[in-house]
Amino acid sequence: MKTAAIIGGGVIGGGWAARFLLNGWDVRVFDPDPEAEAKLAPVLAQARRALPSLTDVALPPEGQLTFHDTMSEVVKGAVWVQESVPERLELKQKVYQTLQAAMDGDAILASSTSGFTPSQLQGCATRPEQIMVCHPFNPVYLMPLIEVVPSPVTDLALVEKAEGILRSLGHYPLRVRKEIDAHIADRFLEAVWREALWLVKDGVATTEEIDEAIRMGFGIRWAQMGLFDTYRTAGGDAGMRHFMAQFGPCLQSPWTKLMDVPEFTDELVDLIAGQSDAQSGHMTIAEMLKARDDNLVGMMRSLKANDWGAGAVMNAHEASLRAGTVLGAHADELEDVSTPIQTVRRAVPLDWTDYNGHMNEARYLQAFGDATDRFMAMIGCDADYIATGGSYFTAETHIRHVDEVHAGAVIDVRTQVLVGAGKKLHLFHEMYEGERLLATGEHFLLHVSLETRRPSDPSAAILTSLERIATAHSALTMPEGAGRAVGQRP
Ligand SMILES: NC(=O)c1ccc[n+]([C@@H]2O[C@H](COP(=O)([O-])OP(=O)(O)OC[C@H]3O[C@@H](n4cnc5c(N)ncnc54)[C@H](O)[C@@H]3O)[C@@H](O)[C@H]2O)c1
Image (cartoon, rainbow, N blue to C red; front, side, top):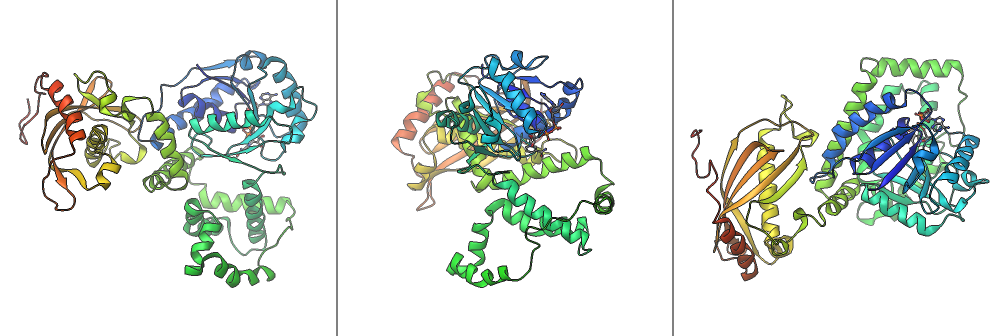
């Protein structure tokens, strides 16, 4: 079992704890605050609600979470030690002295620091080569980006190991080539923050107007294409060169305040805090965090469908979760096909529920459609085969809704082949949460030539794989409900 040690369990440490835990790691937390456990509980609850929604395959079973009184207890045997104590250099350096006295020499010691360079953190450490920055973004359990910053003395083999682990957690490790204060992303955020403070101070815009300018416009654009690709597309067919020729001269105009920083007077703080209250004081922070997570999940799931940006990271994570399981196997690799085959194991995502909080009717069909797709891929009717001109088309579907299910529940679909011969494929899916039957879905499909659009025989390889399962399943009893018409219920 892999163990992560979390040093400092505040906003960021709590997010790291949740990310590791929900990806099957054991997590040990050290935080001197007597309220540490109580502080982490809501972060974990938010993560349990949102993170499983990101992939269409269930995460592994959760690891074990424990709280400890000493750092040495926490780091003993840990593969990953994540420091997320307050942003004070001398505190972090002191903490590393204690950690390195007890932790394994080949474990990763990563800091969440937003501002310090790894060289600064390494200071007078016993083993500076073990220390790197892994700078996350809030909420750590949802945001993919981790800026990985080594110093010239950090062991690069350890950095590569860290990046592999981050990928296995669904993160996107971005290696920062040169250590600088505040790494890459916070440099932008600070520039934008500085401009926003000036706009409020000068009375040009309120906090709300600035937020609208971001979320109605470039914020959405940036989330999917970043800065340079967005500008490339803005340059038309001539791309980046045209864009630079067109907008480059603007940089000479005083559009921005550049490096000036407005003084944080009481008056400015009151002005901004007051406007912020007027803007969003009608919501609790907990309500805002829930909305934030729902929106992030929804946006990232859209990107996932396009295999783009943060969504492509989720797809890669999903592929690694499938690998080595029945959900990633070819049927011929399965030794025993005598019982219904698992074709789906996933959490019900947040955006699959309706106004009652139940899984929406259309999503039952989606889950069963996914099960059919998975079964087709399993017998060799995958994207590569379909590109050669053949596929199965669904001719008829019958779904029975047996019991309700809510967001976050892990559902399994098991698939029985009723007929698998020649052009015909007749499947019966059963959807469960644990041992509770939720729904059944019956599909009749015909293999079709994509050229003539008429029924045709599948490839010999597909037929061989299919008939092996069909023969084995012919010994099973006909499932209760198979072949029923609408309205016939026991
Ligand atoms: N808040 C953010 O958005 C954000 C984003 C990325 C990185 N970071 C970085 O993460 C780090 C932590 O920030 P945060 O926002 O979670 O702060 P926080 O104040 O929410 O949490 C810090 C935690 O550290 C604990 N702590 C204090 N002294 C400790 C010690 N000696 N040993 C162990 N724990 C101790 C505190 O009790 C507290 O729970 C900082 O370095 C910060 O720059 C913050």
